[in-house]
Length: 209
Image (cartoon, rainbow, N blue to C red):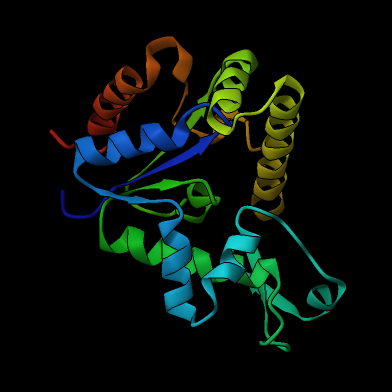
C-alpha cells in the first residue's frame, strides 16, 4: 500500500475491546494508540497530561465556551479565550493528534471518536466490540474486585458516558451498527480467536495481500 491504514475500535465496557486492539496491533505490526494519545496530545500542546486524562471520553460544554467558539470540523474550538481549558478544546487538540498519527503511520486507535474524526482517511476500518451484559459483568467483577451491584452500576455508567461523548462530538449513536464496518461479539470466540478473525477481515479490506 502507498498509504497507512487505521483501525478504530469502539467498545462496550468489559467486552475486551482494548485487549483485542492490542492483539491486532501485534499481529499487524502497527502502532497501538489508547492512553498513549493523551501523552501525545500533552506533548503537542504543552498542556498537562492530567488535564487530558480528566477529560478523557467525557463530554462537557460551558456557557462561556458556547459564546466563544468557532466551527472546527464536527466539533468546535474556542478562539476568544485560549486559556480556558474546556473538554471541547482538549478534544480538538486530541483530534489533531489522531489525524496526524493516522497520516504518518498505520495504527489501531481505541475510542475517542476516531472513526468519525478519520472519516476522510483513505483507508480506515471501523470496528465495534460488544458482549452480553452478564459476560461483561463477570469480567468487571473479577478485574476490579467488585460485587454484582457495583459492577452493574459501573458498566451502565461507563457505557452511558461513552455513548454521550460519542453523540456529543459526532451527533451519531455510539452503538449504531451503520457506523461500523464490522460489529463483533467477543464472547463467542474469545479474545485471541476474535482478533485472528478481525486480522483476516482487516487485511481484506485494507488490501494488504
